[in-house]
Structures are given as structure tokens and as C-alpha cells.
Image (cartoon, rainbow, N blue to C red; front, side, top):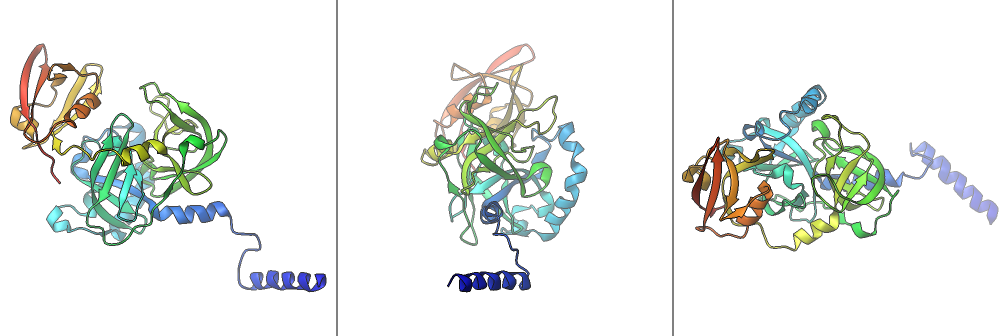
Length: 353
């Protein structure tokens, strides 16, 4: 019987060779990535809004244009918009990829970073089968740098990832990051969990530190364990003078995303400004035409000091306060331009769909 068993194994081995199969067992890590990849997405915005996006002026980001120009060209040629481009007045040529994300249910809910979609009016999700969907923000947490998107009018049931338990991860545990660094779509990098419970200089607490290569464009993408579960959302890197990957990257624990998923939906009101917190204060970068801010007379370059008498330390403070309001509510902003200050009353309006 033993000889017969050996003979069967030899015959199976020869059959594998004749069929062009590998003798070695399939790499489980490769198979895991193949299963997860369809649930990883790119996040894009209208190029008309790209000029004001925070990474657009980065010399380091511009340096890598030559690497992703071919990718961008192929994307335009192969992409299949799942929306009426004439009605939306946007085509694949008008879309600029700025980040990453991942699908968490068959209906098309997507997790990404808040800073990827902050202030954007037109958001697009790009799947790895070259399809483009319009999406909207349904929940957000600026303080955790997380946002939940919803794909509009999905044409199918989506493949989605499983969410792991970020409270049970171990230092030195192997991990994989998937995203779109520098526009190089669906790039896979690997490393280990370097530390847990990290606090960054800007005050974000409880982050996962990893040495998996993460660069601009990876933001919002998944950090995955060897079981194929998402344990973190890649959010930032440590750099020196604007440099790239240095072996120190941070991810928001996925359990924080789980909490956001069960929280109240995004506020139904909006103000209509894009802000940037600087040494001077909260500076208004842009004011959307026809928005409540525009109607109230807010101008680019003005500094927002307080809202309804509450001092503001960052733009996030203003966002969180507005989320407590409803359409028709009035807020009073104290603003400063040059050496003069003034109070401006803004009537909040319903968010655009």
C-alpha cells in the first residue's frame, strides 16, 4: 500500500508538470491579495478642483509625474464610466486620482481618509476592472481622519473586504498595504506592524505604525493582515523635507472605522468653504459659488476666528460644530482680514446630493 501511495504521488507530480502547474503549493499570500484586490478602489476628483488640493503643489509629488503618466493614459483609454458623463459634465480625462479606499459591503460603501475627500463636491470611485462610479460622503470623522462613501446607482453587487480586529494585532505581525501611490494604480507593498498606539505630532492617537511602503496616493487604502482582513486605514507617513517613504507609516485602526459606521449619518447642511489651518489661523482657501458662505459675503484669504462665540483652533472644530446644525440655522462667524475683524451671519443650507 505504501508503494502504491508513492506511485500515486509521483503520477500527480508528473501530471502537474505536464499541465504547466507549479510543483510548489500556491503562495497563500498571493491568493489572499487576489481575493482582496477587487475590493480596493482608487478615489478621484474633478481636475477642475485639483488645483486647490493639498498635494497639488508638492515638488516631491510632481517629481513622479513621469512614472504615472502612462498609467493615467491607460486609465483614460480603458475606463468605463458607470454614470452619464454628459449629464455630469465630466469624462475620464477630467478625473484626477488622489487617494485610495476599500469596499466594505456588496452595496458599495467605501472607507477612505477624510483628508482625501475633504471639501470635494465631486468624488469618483475607480475599481480595478476600470469602472468609474460617482460617490458621495455619508459619514465623516475629521478628528479620526475617516470618511465613509456610498457609490451612487451601483450597477452590480460589489466584492468587499472583511474587517478584522485592530485591538488584537501584534507587533512584528506581517501586513500588506494596497493603494495607488503616485497614481500607480493598485500597488501592493508589504512589511510588519512596527508599533501600536502611536501618537503623532498633530495629536492623532492610537495609530498603527508600519514599515510597509506608503506614499502620497496610498491614503485611505487598506492595511491587511495575513488572513485577508483589514486592520487599518493607511493615513500618513513620516517624511524629511517632503521626502517619500522612510520606513515609518501610520494607519488608523479599523475598529475606529467600525465605530463611525454605526454613528449618525453626515450632517445634511453645508457652509461651502475649503479651509486650511496655518500659523496665521484658519484661512479660507476657496468659497464655492452660490454657497451659504458666498451669499453671506465670505472671501478667500479671510481668517475664521470663532463661530457663535466659540473660539476655533482648527478647521475641524468648525466642521464638527456645523454637523450639529440643520438647514436654515444661522451661525455667526467672526472673521479677520488684514488688521480688521467683522462678524458675518451665515444661513446654512441643505447639502447638495
